[in-house]
Image 1 (cartoon, rainbow, N blue to C red):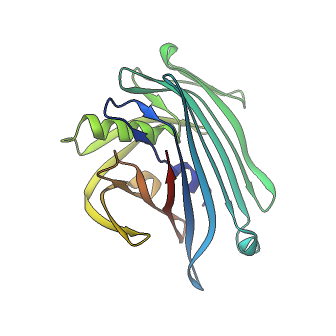
Image 2 (cartoon, rainbow, N blue to C red):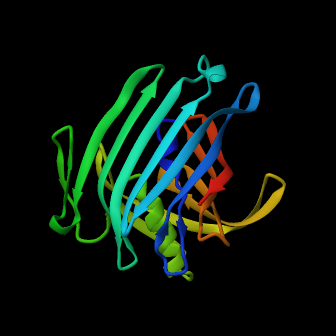
Length: 229
C-alpha cells in the first residue's frame, strides 16, 4: 500500500504530443478477508502552463475503513516537456499511516548537471539520459509508447528517497476492461520490480484506466471512474 499512490498516473496528449490538463478520479479496492472492497479514492490533476507541468495526486482511505487501513498520500511532480521528452525537476511526497507521518521529503533534480539532491541531505549522481521521479515516470512511459509503437520494453532511471534505480516496464498483450458499462481496449504493461500491472487505454494515448498492485500479501486495484479535460 505504501507505494500504491506512486502508481496513480493518468495523462493525456494532443496529436502534437503536447501535454493537456486534466483531472481524473479513481476508486481504490483491496482484497481482504471480507472480499474485494472499495476502501478509498484518489484525485489526479495535471496542470499545464505553456510547456511547464505540475502533476499532483491526493489519495486517502474513506472514514468507514480507517480502522482497517488509515492511509493518505500527497505527491507533487513538476517539470517541462521539451522536444517530446518529459524533463522532471522536482518531486515531493507526504505519506501518513494511522495519522503518523511515514514519508516527508523533497527531491530537486538537475538533469543537465547529472545529479539529484534530497531534502534529507543525500545527493546522487545520475547517468546521462532521462531521470524521472515515481510520478513523472508514467508520463515518460506514455510518451514513449506513443512515439515508439513497435517497442515492447521501456527502462527509466527513477529517483526517490532511496536513491536512483532502473525500472523496466514491459508490454504484456491487450485486454478489454469494463468501466461504467463501457468496454475500453487497453494495453497491459507490467513492472516486475514494483509488482505492478497497468491497463492503459489504447485509444486515449495510454491513459491508465486500471492499476493493479501487489504489496506484501495484499492486492490493490485502482479504477478510473471519471475524467475531465
